Every structure is written in C-alpha cells, then in structure tokens.
Length: 357
Image 1: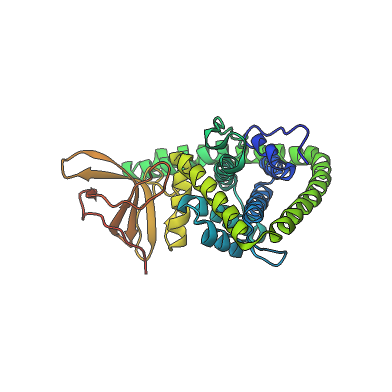
Image 2 (image 1 turned 60 degrees about the horizontal axis):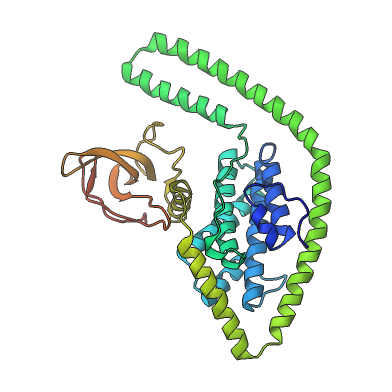
C-alpha cells in the first residue's frame, strides 16, 4: 500500500517498502515543533515497524507479545547485525520509552532521534531497496527548531557567568546578567505563545493523519502476517537460505553506511550513559562551563588537551571519575569506538579506557 504523496524529504524513500514507514516518520517530523515527546514515540514505532519487517523477511518468529528488546535480540542472534546498527535501534527504543513515561522530551533530544532514525532508514533501504548499497539519500534536512534560539541564549548566559566570575567584576556583571535574564524571559514567553498558536492550528491536521495512520497500520499488519505465513511453509533448508540472503544484504548495507560525526556522538553519548556516565556532547562541554566534580562520573566534551609533542587540541570527550581524568574518547565516522590515546588532559595523566564502578 504505497503512499500517494510522501512529503518528507528525509524519509520519502521508505515509500518503496511500505506507506506505514513514511507516515510514522512524517508524523514524527510534524510533531517536532509543538510536541517533541510525540516525535520520539513515533520514531520508536518506526524502529519497531522496521525490525518487524526485517524479522518477517528473515523468517524470525514474533507475535503481539514479543517486546522490541526481545525481537532485536533475535535479529542480532540470527543476522549478526553490525554494532552501529544495533545501537541505532537501541537508541530509538530507549528514547521512545523515555518519552512515553517521562513526558520531558526536549527539542534537542527529538532532533537527535530524527537523525538516528534517518540513518537507520537509509540502512534499511540500502538493504532491501531497488538501488541497494548505491542509494544516495542526500543531506538530512532538520525541521525548524523553535528552542534553538532559547538554548543559544541560555548558553550565552552561562558563558557570561563563567567569564564574569573569572574577571571578578561584580557590579558590571550583575547589570549585564540582569539584562540577559530579562531578555531570556521575553524570548521564552514569545516562544511559548507561538508554540501554543501553532499547536492549535495543527490539531485538526493531526487527527486526519492519525486516521490515515490507522488504516495503513492495518494494511501493514496484514502484509506482515501474510509474509510470515508464506515463510512458515518453507522447509528448513529454504528458510535458512532466505535468512542468509537477508543477512548478506544487511551486512553490505552496514558497510556502506557512513554516519556523520554528529550521529556518532549521539551513539557514543548513549553508550556512555548506559555505562553510568553523565554524557551529553552538546550540553556537557568545556566551553559551556562543564567541569569535573567530586562524587560524579562525567564525560566532558571538547576538553583542552596537550600531547607529548606539546601540540594543543581538544578531545571529543574526557572521562572524569570525580576530579581524576581516566580516559579519552574520540568520535570517528562510520563506527563509534572507544579509542584511548596518549593525550594528557591539561598535561595530566595519560588516558586509558575505563568505566565507572
């Protein structure tokens, strides 16, 4: 059941596979400005739909009681998914669950979710689309972020606080800070008003899209059920050959997927958080005033470094156990990896891989 006119420039290519994929992605993009929480919920559903489609193509059993975590485990066991692909699925599942239960999604997190979902969709399309690994998707087009200006203002305020403390200029600082705080409040009130007006305007349109989504979901479930029934009729040898063919396609697509450093940082942030570190490469940065603190495990991004050759630079992350730097993590394109280097954070001890206990 292909969609007649997919409007998403980021996900329109998924229309070749099923209209439901495109509708879920477009719903996520439409909700972004007024409800970033819904964006991540829809992206989680997109991840679930892609994994179910992959399982059905591979003859891997699942039903209504199979959780997404269990299905991803089965897919990895049978198809040996590449680590970065597992992580893309994992992030959409985890962030979608947070959005469902915590109700505190920020636009920054929803934007990261869209970038992750886009890379996962490209991988899926290169695995099963007509163009295969030769598919060229074009650049990701981010939706307008109504919170970007406010976040920049908050960042400027934090930087001003830090600079003023360093200069110990209390009289001038209080006046400048007061002016910026008043400006921030005015910006926030204007933003809230604009978002409220936009949400009312989109309410009717959202109901129409939900009706279309319901119809497409019914058609999709029927298609998956038919595919599962067909594969269940195969003998063991044919089923194994089918699974091996799917595995070869997904592996070839994985090798052709070159993720941007930005998406790689999103994946590394998640890996660090899963391991128990405070990590956010956009917010917990040296330039924004993040510093190590006693009793914390903190990954501080863009930390100044100095090598043995006295060359200065910035590490993507330096991991601090309390006040002690214990590791340097570098973000590399394509496959996110932990990579220790002989670089001293501010001329302190050499780095080595470690995780908090």
